[in-house]
Image (cartoon, rainbow, N blue to C red):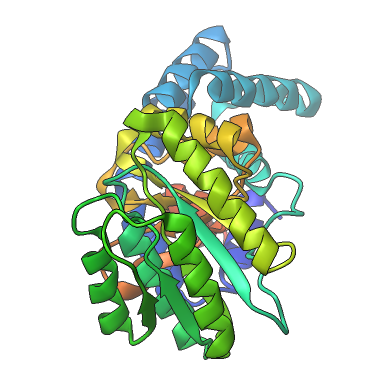
Length: 331
């Protein structure tokens, strides 16, 4: 069974609605990345010129220079080992390599939710990436699963941030713990923890400020928040999620590096994936930082924030080729 067929079989285990969301949300990246590969893989032979053009396409989709070179090197190695001669055989091989990169070691997939205790999830990221919206959508996701969720409005710096989170709290139907603008974020998070415990909550989602122009102050602030959380809830925060705007491409990678140096990031949320043709940033982040993408924003609706799945991601990129191969050879 070819890799494309195995990939389709694996993805078929998810719901049709989720598969469609990935297809729709990644349509621009698919057209830009995979569409551009059609001319490469329709060549008469596999040669150095093919590899060089493929590198350019990957870099153009914001896969990143280092990751693009690594992908092409892996492709070269596999072509030699499998003694491939037809460029048309490279697409499923490339998709297999991409899935391997996104999967990583497999030990850090999924969210670290506590079964019988409060789960504290901390959100970090610069202003304008969709952090507050992500928190609201994640609150909706977990409430739909029957979890009791509380939000802590720890971004006390940005004008309107507290009010924006309160609007999301009302929309989703969850409590929001807040102080006045300019208050100590660590104090807000502390009160959020106490409120979550008193109300028997399952999950506390904590917002934080994102003013990178004052990087030193921001990072010291985040360290203080971490200390408060760890003191009140042992082993917490259980997740520290960095929210990045997919449309900013390599700027998002630079943000990821800065935050990764300052605090222990356990996962990435990529927002606005449906609005960019450069979704290759997911591969760059996974390969260069060894941090998993855990959530992806595929649209504006409440349920368009989806758990990230590497196989689903690659399937959505190569969906036309997968469907064509299945149609021509249903067995």
